[in-house]
Amino acid sequence: MTAIRVAGLRKLFGSAPAVDDVSFDVESGSIVTLLGPSGCGKTTTLRMIAGLERPDAGEVRVGDRIVTSAERGIHLPPDKRRMGMVFQSYAIWPHMTVFENIAFPLRGQGRGARLSPAEIRDKVMTMLQSLGLEGLHDRPAPLLSGGQQQRVALGRALVGDPDVLLLDEPFSNLDARRRDEMRFELKEVQARIGVTTIFITHDQSEAMVLSDRVVVMNAGRIVQEGTPQAIYQRPQTRFVMEFLGQVDQVGARVAIGRDGAPRAHVVGACEIEVALDPSQPWRADEEVVLMLRSAAVQVRAPDGPAGWRGRVLSRIYLGERTEYVVGVGEARVRAFGPTLQMHDVGAAVALDFAPEAIRAWPAAGTARP
Ligand SMILES: Nc1ncnc2c1ncn2[C@@H]1O[C@H](COP(=O)(O)OP(=O)(O)OP(=O)(O)O)[C@@H](O)[C@H]1O
Ligand SMILES: [Mg+2]
Image (tube, rainbow, N blue to C red; front, side, top):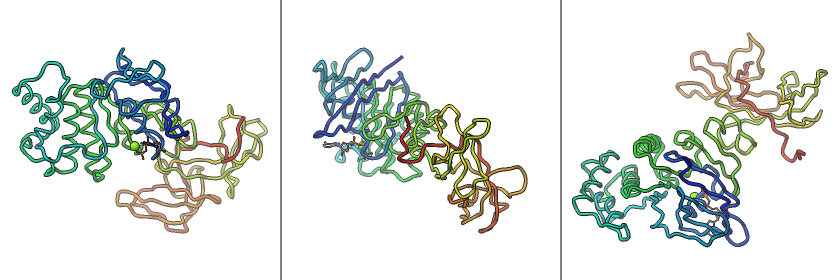
């Protein structure tokens, strides 16, 4: 069931659109992530959904309610939308205890029947427990760690039992380790409560861990949408492929075989060839860029089955494995190998990777009909 439908959202700041024709659905109880580089319009999109910004075009529905519509002149204020929000900066009250922070939305006005102090206590204590904050209810908020503060902010967003949870880079102030833990905790809490969630990040691994679906944005527009696996394995543009993981670029030139099959020959190592998707309109001699996902490339000794051949330019010992930079023709390719059997700088090596680790794109500036 669709819980949130965003249709044709547009927001201009001055004459430039910060968000342009953004449409996506969120299934009930799922997590959708808006992923994209800084300035691509993620926060502006979320603020329009929350009611903190009015769209210049488009609408947002939650269930069968239209909460905002530029065309129909509908604009429900944020506190009437039944949405909980957590932002990047710790949005908790420093002069209150943990308990009072989480209880705050329950004491607000406009919530219909007022809750009794016992009911508030019950709800807050249950929330503290589900967030692993039991025992901290009397603690003044500033005396918490960054991770605990963000859990309090999450508790405050969830305690009023919202229809929708909106999270704008909530973990970016935490160190890498706490951030990893909080991702898993959030996913657990979200699954347990079953609240429909929109999450914002510019971190592709965070999007992969958390999301049921990912909406990739660039320059105010959606460039691809799908499951984490689909966008990682089948990127539709160079931008998406580069944004979703470490890639190396290898220059190549198209040759059409006698059988009519297009192939790419690596510049400086013509004996290395890659079969190209025959459904694409490749032209003989056209320059292409091969993008290779570093994480999927393995280094081995050059004997044995055919593979890409190259020479080790540098290597770094990483403990669990070794990272290499291998010269292939004119290109430099990052690759990994075991630590037991390392290859020296200058050694000839072969590179192995699965066919889906490499994609060919027309070179920059090459117009495609
Ligand atoms: N109030 C505003 N007035 C003018 N321009 C704005 C305003 N808010 C955002 N912008 C511009 O709109 C564009 C989108 O901004 P937005 O904050 O939505 O990006 P973002 O994807 O959230 O980026 P980040 O990852 O850095 O948070 C940017 O170019 C930004 O400078
Ligand atoms: Mg932002």
